[in-house]
Length: 157
Ligand SMILES: [Cu+2]
Image (cartoon, rainbow, N blue to C red):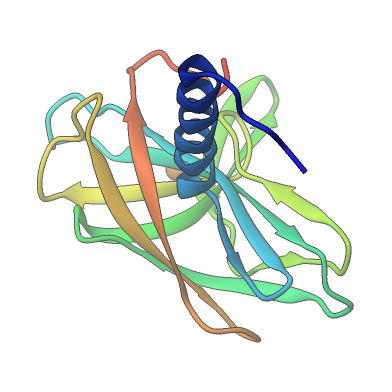
């Protein structure tokens, strides 16, 4: 049994509890599927598309398929894939993304990403917005994405 003998002890425990809640707030678990480290880059105005990233971990025994993404901040959102061919970076719709049993799919700059087109508002650093991920096999998942700086490469960097 843990014994707390000082105010400092109580305060540091509280602080740890708050930090844990903060860290957990960004990941969402639904059954065997965990959405982790969602984030988006700040946008330059609304005329150009913005990108968002996250990881999807499937701890279950069956594959899950991400079929659609939507967010109130843009009229259209799509899962995109970046590819390099002949030294030229291209991107386009990735279609359905299958997360095999026991595996993880990581959306990150230069790879798979969520493209938000026709932004209704600029994405400002420090703010957050919602996104709904629709899957074929499980119910839809709502995630909250913090907006990082224009040059950010991830929430932990
Ligand atoms: Cu894209």
